[in-house]
Length: 70
Image (cartoon, rainbow, N blue to C red):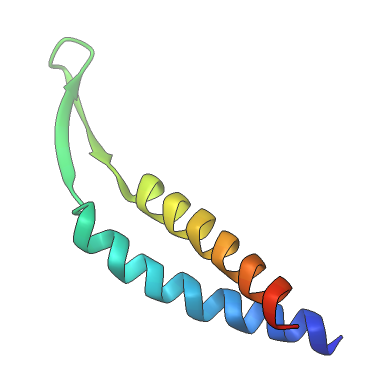
Protein backbone atom coordinates (compact mmCIF):
# COMPACT_ATOMS: atom_id res chain seq x y z
CA UNK A 1 0.00 0.00 0.00
CA UNK A 2 2.81 2.40 0.87
CA UNK A 3 4.69 1.48 -2.28
CA UNK A 4 1.65 2.23 -4.44
CA UNK A 5 1.03 5.54 -2.70
CA UNK A 6 4.64 6.61 -3.13
CA UNK A 7 4.59 5.58 -6.80
CA UNK A 8 1.45 7.65 -7.46
CA UNK A 9 2.87 10.64 -5.55
CA UNK A 10 6.13 10.53 -7.50
CA UNK A 11 4.23 10.07 -10.77
CA UNK A 12 2.10 13.15 -10.04
CA UNK A 13 5.10 15.30 -9.24
CA UNK A 14 7.06 14.12 -12.28
CA UNK A 15 4.01 14.59 -14.52
CA UNK A 16 3.58 18.22 -13.50
CA UNK A 17 7.29 18.88 -14.02
CA UNK A 18 7.50 17.22 -17.41
CA UNK A 19 4.28 18.93 -18.49
CA UNK A 20 5.87 22.31 -17.79
CA UNK A 21 9.03 21.37 -19.70
CA UNK A 22 7.18 19.88 -22.67
CA UNK A 23 5.02 23.01 -22.96
CA UNK A 24 8.18 25.07 -23.31
CA UNK A 25 9.36 22.83 -26.17
CA UNK A 26 6.03 22.11 -27.91
CA UNK A 27 4.00 25.28 -27.70
CA UNK A 28 0.27 24.69 -27.17
CA UNK A 29 -1.70 25.95 -30.13
CA UNK A 30 -5.32 26.13 -31.15
CA UNK A 31 -6.39 26.79 -34.76
CA UNK A 32 -9.78 27.31 -36.31
CA UNK A 33 -9.83 25.14 -39.44
CA UNK A 34 -12.61 25.04 -42.06
CA UNK A 35 -14.20 21.66 -42.77
CA UNK A 36 -16.66 20.38 -45.39
CA UNK A 37 -15.58 22.80 -48.09
CA UNK A 38 -15.73 25.87 -45.88
CA UNK A 39 -19.25 25.35 -44.53
CA UNK A 40 -18.18 24.62 -40.98
CA UNK A 41 -15.20 25.25 -38.75
CA UNK A 42 -13.56 23.21 -36.04
CA UNK A 43 -10.81 23.80 -33.51
CA UNK A 44 -7.60 21.78 -33.97
CA UNK A 45 -5.28 21.57 -30.97
CA UNK A 46 -2.13 19.74 -29.96
CA UNK A 47 -3.13 19.36 -26.29
CA UNK A 48 -3.46 15.56 -26.47
CA UNK A 49 0.06 15.26 -27.90
CA UNK A 50 1.50 17.40 -25.09
CA UNK A 51 -0.33 15.54 -22.32
CA UNK A 52 0.42 12.11 -23.80
CA UNK A 53 4.12 12.81 -24.24
CA UNK A 54 4.35 14.26 -20.73
CA UNK A 55 2.62 11.26 -19.20
CA UNK A 56 4.80 8.73 -21.04
CA UNK A 57 7.99 10.54 -20.09
CA UNK A 58 6.94 10.91 -16.45
CA UNK A 59 5.82 7.24 -16.26
CA UNK A 60 9.22 6.16 -17.59
CA UNK A 61 11.12 8.39 -15.15
CA UNK A 62 8.92 7.33 -12.23
CA UNK A 63 9.39 3.65 -13.02
CA UNK A 64 13.13 4.12 -13.29
CA UNK A 65 13.31 6.04 -10.00
CA UNK A 66 11.05 3.53 -8.29
CA UNK A 67 13.18 0.58 -9.40
CA UNK A 68 16.46 2.26 -8.48
CA UNK A 69 15.54 3.71 -5.09
CA UNK A 70 13.00 1.33 -3.60
